[in-house]
Image (cartoon, rainbow, N blue to C red; front, side, top):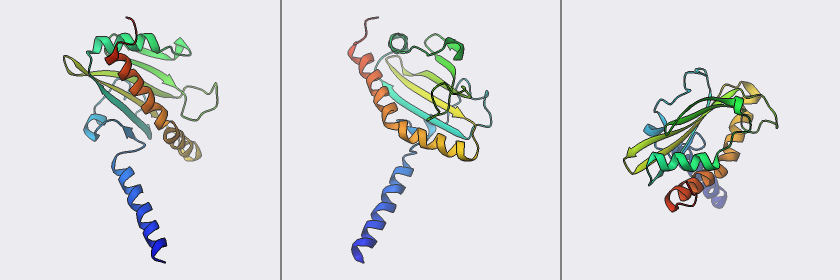
Length: 167
């Protein structure tokens, strides 16, 4: 009985620790960094699935923008809503875990926020409005994609800092 109680308490403590980090709503950002207003926030004011991912990069925004230009290719140019050089890319996206070819009903912004002249915060925010089962599926997709999102952000950071992409 004591082992079962210890296991249950450990599971609850682990779940509370994960929830305290903001997972899966945010990864790599503090709560205050995730609370900033970004381009596209007003396009879906009733979004109930909002996910923020970010990473600080020891490079100026111009370098990060050049790397994004080399590695980022939208599947369909018509999904792009707005681009501002060295600032942000705003596009329409399908919900996480949606089948291939699903309608782009949400928004995603990739924003570059200067922390200092030589340091940039790469902030990605995805917003979706979903109800019932679709909302649960969206959150499940967000959680499932979290590790790959974090890996992608680290790869981008390494490319910017290591100069792995020729500008």
